[in-house]
Length: 293
Image (cartoon, rainbow, N blue to C red; front, side, top):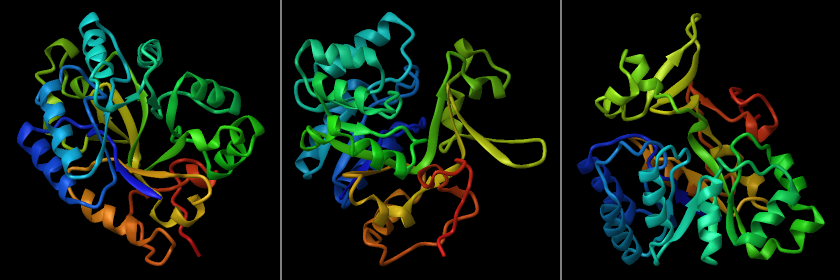
């Protein structure tokens, strides 16, 4: 089982981003994803900056992958997508079908991100035929569903051709919108947002009227209010999951990485925090936190 760091989903200052990836280079992580996957207005790091970081991480022994935008709205974003797909060095995580099409046109392999809706063996086999080398499971899939899907003959025939990756730590991306809800929460229009999301390094929490945490606003992306944390479910993943993904948080990411590594076989279980959840993998409501007996 390998561990990955997904792309930074929040808007952090350039210095914080560079410091984070320097820590990543010195850490035990196996795979690092780079790139802006949420909002094209976030330009603290540009494409060339990401490429420089990618080469630094590769020299440190990490596998580097480039993540593309999930919601594309302008010709300039398509041009940027083309730069990622044509980078010539690193595997690309395609987060929309347009990126997959670009990569397939050039006979390039790709990773299918979790925003790509893959729920059955026919779709999975189709993506494998198009060049998919790794499948990032949709966050709402349960372990039982994944096991049944991978057991299908259509998939078993090509199981050695692709890896599975599971989003196992962090606030789960649930939806994307043409509107920026972080800007709206500050009574700003999207075009005059003044990049206010940089003030919320872990997104902006939304509580219901009765005080329950329900969502995290992250620009045009809406995330789960609770943090998904499958550290105690790692033993149940060994026949299903090849790569376990941790989504970078503003603090504590690398400490959690080591906790995950230490609990691969269930030998170092961790108490979940109040706002942690694990329901989806256990075939329960996503917001549920089930404590192992």
